[in-house]
Amino acid sequence: MADPGIPSTLDRRTFLGATLATGAAALAGAEVKAPGTRLLLEGATVESLQAGLTAGRWTAVDLVKQHQARIRALDRGGPHLNAVLELNPEALAIAAALDAERRAGKVRGPLHGIPVLLKDNIDTADRLHTTAGSLALAEAPAPVRDAHIVERLRAAGAVVLGKTNLSEWANFRSSRSSSGWSGRGGQTRNPHALDRSPSGSSSGSAVAVAAALCPVAVGTETDGSIVSPANACGIVGLKPTVGLVSRSGIIPISHTQDTAGPMARTVRDAALLLGVLAGPDPRDPASIDAHFEADYTRFLVPDGLRGARLGVVKNLLGGHARVDAVLRPALDLLKAAGAELIEVELKSSAYDDAEYEVLLFEFKAGLEAYLAGRGGAVRDLVALMAFNDAHPKEELFVCGQEILAQAQPKGGLSDPAYRKALEACGQARRDITGLLQHHNLQALVGPTGGPAWLIDHVNGDSGSLSFSSPAAVAGCPHLTVPAGFAAGLPLGLSFVAGPWQEGTLLRLGHAFEQVARSRRAPGFAATSPVTR
Image (cartoon, rainbow, N blue to C red; front, side):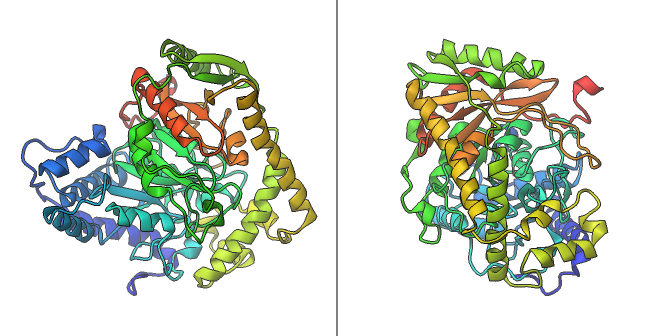
């Protein structure tokens, strides 16, 4: 529920800063009562943290305190990453209750006592706020129910640590937007080079995982919003098949493309988190016929690349010398690990116009239904745009709202223009599955994207390469794994497969991760070496 003492909407960022400062004062000087040396969070995994909990080397309360301290030091202090919008005031109490369960012999699963951060477009029916980064929702009534994935996280014993910043409205607001910027949270920064974009829209979740502000986080994707920031920040990101993870309680863009998914520092941690997130939900019809696995870690086998046939998307090569310099050795590692590589072609931009038309129609229908159900002063796109116009210094000084204006006049989902565009988008799945079947491939591979671009609040984002659209439009799964660095900036290798093949992607990605060993902790440099 919203706190009655929260100041007006225009004082929102001041309030949030004060909340974090109060938490810092309360925890200042608190000693972690775990024996031995202080936890090294940078290299921690869910399994290593869980092993320490099992052995009694630390508690869930200790984990929450240490991650809160790191957030204070790096997010609000030091490099000012600005990835975390809000800390959960109930996190320590939740952790204490989970510790009591453990002492009584009850352990709910691999996430019992593990802190998790959530993107701020995911409903939580608690004292946290859900705003999609917009000040227009800062004073809206709290959701009456957790998102389905939050219910699953709580049932699994995860501690909701807080909410992360994002590109406002999940980056569906302006063609000149700056990834990682929202009116509520300001600009999130890339931990590998602070003047570079974290990419978006799951910017805060990616930065938080990369900087060890949390072990794992939840992001959402419509087209690129998990895999692109994972690429830019040097972490693992998995966009599942649409329907594998319920969307109920997540502020929508597109019911045909939206999905939540895990963001982690290792493929194993992504598999553990996916096992909790995935599951049927009567509130999301797309999840009813999904193909779920009880344990995605069972796919993480030795020699997972041995005998695999992989299609290298050749049209993603040759356009960026720094990307090619990382990708070519990565492909060599795949071959050395036993994979057979076949060159194929897949046009990433073939569906752009139809996809955009579909998103405009579905965004209007989905968001207005969400706003009407949420309550508050902003109940439709007209009211949302009016709010932004009334608060230009807070909401319009970085980018406009032309996408909102384009979506507002669209008709219903029976409109012939929408149906025509939707049919054209169906070609994306046919293209992916056709390539896989024709060449007998387990997955397509290619660079996830280019190096992170400079943050630019005048011209907006300027990314030059992306492999996100085919899988996004097709609703197919897409995994990115760290592959190397270009000028000190991370680059990822993507694995794309047919529907419900998350296990295959995790097997391939895990095997590549073990031979590549390319992830490294960020150094919080002011800029990348090439621009020094």
